[in-house]
View 1 (cartoon, rainbow, N blue to C red):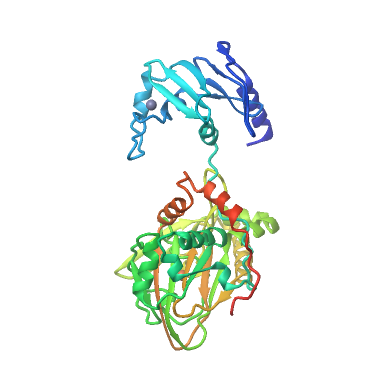
View 2: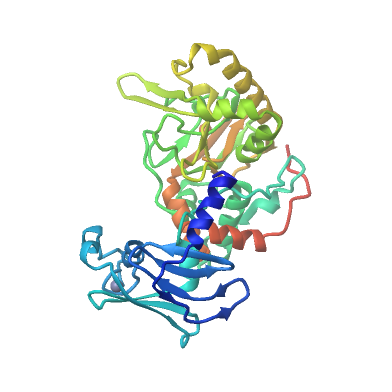
Length: 427
Ligand SMILES: [Fe+2]
Ligand SMILES: [Zn+2]
């Protein structure tokens, strides 16, 4: 929003209607609550310092938090938009100072009473939605000690949730995390996954074992080098978490790599803003073909932004799964290739390498972190799985307080997880 529009809107918000009365003045640490006023068209609330906010009575009535309007057990709304037509005229607005937290009380024309905590109003009025974004404090690089992003298998499963909380914190902060000292069997993979959520069932199965036998039409089922990529770019919604459990490797190579796509994209946008725009705006077709069995196809840009917050939300990039690029206007082809070559170079340079030994389980945030591995010899058996993004974010929010969209959880994490990584990953 431009500065000019913001100013015009603020001026509009500051305009008082004629029929109101200042009720009280309360100073709090970050809030000056100066009064309330009502009119036919809106309720003026001073819930932010030096600013009057006129709120639609329809919004306030729709957001009544009482048990008749929000079901106390299901947390689903009982009141639906159609109910608002005849019940959204304000009769009176008062400030309740008796409770520990100040509440605003509104009596409506049908004598229904709504009570709102001021903090709740501050959090929810207007376009406050910030979304859940990757932490910008990811200092993981090739000099990082693996223990900084690891949690012991038994601690992870422990009922006190501390291990799980620490683990989910690592995923939020670094985009990936490791479980160590797990028995190298699929029963343990299943236990670890189900600690977070049910595995997502795809054409690979729910929980799938893989080795270099080309059981599926994917480079993961070969012993070839696999370049950094995210999985399921060809799905309408790529998988949320990616899980790899090493069960056995008798041979050489097979070193895993990860790269924090969000961090790299952020640097890329600073260095090459025009190229960033190209990868953000030009959609790319992705596909998975297994003749007679599957034909997945989806079109989406590599740097997919949230349409509401305009922040990077999902990095979709698998150089192995690009379908014919029939989405690029002819005049943009050369700049598209310039951008993608440049971005791809940057990804490969920033890869963090480490060996997954038997009993180590790697989880990556597949909307943010890319993964790959070097070629290998011998027998290498892995067990893998996916968890949907909805499922892992739900668990994450439950772990860190049942917040609406996880943004409070991020603040909490950034405040508590202060240890940075200093030592060596074994390459
Ligand atoms: Fe993959
Ligand atoms: Zn109500």
